[in-house]
Structures are given as C-alpha cells and as structure tokens.
Length: 148
Image 1: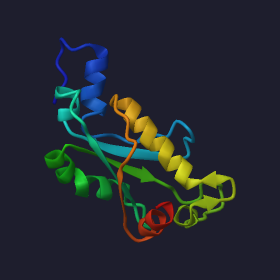
Image 2: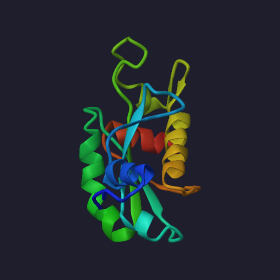
Image 3: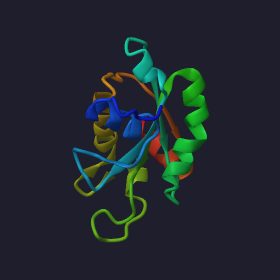
Image 4: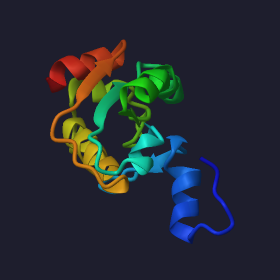
C-alpha cells in the first residue's frame, strides 16, 4: 500500500511505517529496546476484523529482522501481526549478552519490556492483544520457556 498525494499526513505515515514490514520502533517504556512489526494490509482495509499476534524472539545473534521476515508470509495469509523484539547486547554498558534469556538482569524485567512492546504495537494499529503466540529460537527459546 503506497501513499498517495491526496492522503492525509497520518495516512501517508501509516502507509510508509505501519504496513507490511515496518522500520525499527523504539519501545516507549524503555527506549534501550526496540521492535519491528509485520502488519498485514487487512489491518487497515478491515479495521473491525480481528488480528492475531505472533511474537518471534531472536536468538543470541540478534538477527531480529530475520525472525520478523521469516514469519511475514504466515502473517499475510493468516491475518496476523508479527512482532520481533530486539534485546541488544550490553544495555547496561557491560557487554552482557544473556540477560534476556533469564528474564531479569539487575533492574531490567524483560517480560515487562516485551509486554510493553505488545501494548505499544496494539496502540499503533488500534488493536488490543490480550493473548498472543510466542516463538523463540536459541536464546529466544530460553526467553519463551521462562516467559510462559
């Protein structure tokens, strides 16, 4: 869905940043963390239609876009938003790489960060995700196991 000249600024921004494979979005609750989305066009064409959410948590190598992109076809054909969080190495300035795998790293609660991302994604597309699917590979599998 490409923006048109007659579209409002909000519609142009939505077409550029909130349809299909999105850019990286900072987590409002804690901007040290970010996420990417895949948003099917049906989210805007059929605003009353329910959408599911799949959260795909990266592994230790933090290939965030790979996890979003790998599920985008699933999202397209199943009317499902894909959220791929990024939990970077060294968010406390210490090059710690594994904190997210264990859910807590000093003052950081990664489960709360993820829930904030889910809520923010819902606000961006005028939806609420009370329940969602959760996938994780490698370090993301550790996260998923502990989150559940």
